Length: 184
Image (cartoon, rainbow, N blue to C red):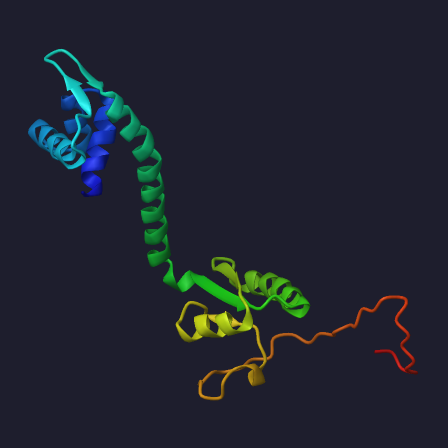
């Protein structure tokens, strides 16, 4: 079954007029009839009651319409999104991060700074455990990952760029008895 037959069915279910559906779909009335007949054979049920003066949905046709309308709507959205992505290949940046406190701080800073210089680039953030993040980088699903050079197998050729300086803080319970003379 192809989506064209389903789209023809949906149009006919809304218009209840073979001629209007043919016009809407830019096909012949005969092609509408053939598509509906083919769909009915595939489903092994009648979808429409037909007479010379009127076309109405059968109960099975009503259920099929209710089920397929959101599916085709979502399908059309996915197609549109895929086309937009394909047209904007150079305007997408996927950043992988493991989710540490520093990563979250760094992501916020990096996205803000980068967006000032490249406002047309859409940034996608992917949060994974370290092993998955590195695997996604190797497979080309991430453009950039936040990590340290020693965290990735030495068998991979990568370039590393220091992006931010930061500090780590140890947060302890007030009941923890730190006996050091210098701050942690």
